[in-house]
Image 1 (cartoon, helix red, strand yellow):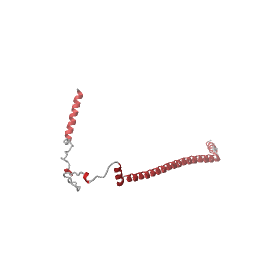
Image 2 (cartoon, rainbow, N blue to C red; image 1 turned 90 degrees about the vertical axis):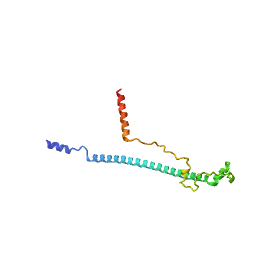
Image 3 (cartoon, helix red, strand yellow; image 1 turned 120 degrees about the vertical axis):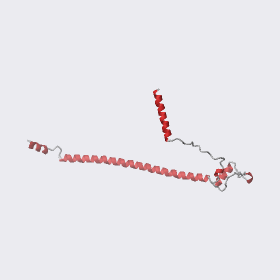
Image 4 (cartoon, rainbow, N blue to C red; image 1 turned 60 degrees about the vertical axis):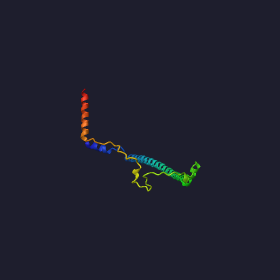
Length: 156
C-alpha cells in the first residue's frame, strides 16, 4: 500500500510543464515591468532635480554678475572728483588757510608712537573686577551652614 501511495503522489502532476513555464514567464515579465517603472520614475525625478539645480546655478551666476556691477557702480560714486563735485552741490567749498584752526594737544606724538598713548588719559583706570578671596573650604562651610539652617527651619 505504501508503494502505491508513493507512485500515485509522484505520478500525478498538478501543473503541467507548459503551464509552469507560462506562469514563470508572466511572473518574470511582471517583475521586469515593475523594476522598469521604478527605474524610469527615479531617472525622471533625477532629471527634474538636475534641471532645477541648473536653473538655480544660472540664477546664482546672474545675481553674482549683478552684484559685481553694483559694486563697480558704488566704487564709481566714491571717486574723489565725484565726491568733490557732490560736496559743492550740497554747499561745501574748499577751506582757505585763514579758515583752518590748528589745535595743539599736549603729549601728542605726531610720528604715531604708541609709547605716548597713556599721556592722553587723565588718570589711569582702576580695575573694575572685585577681588576674589573665596576658598573651597569657605564655600563648603557656607553650604553646610545653609543646609543646617534649612533642616532646622523644616522642623518648625
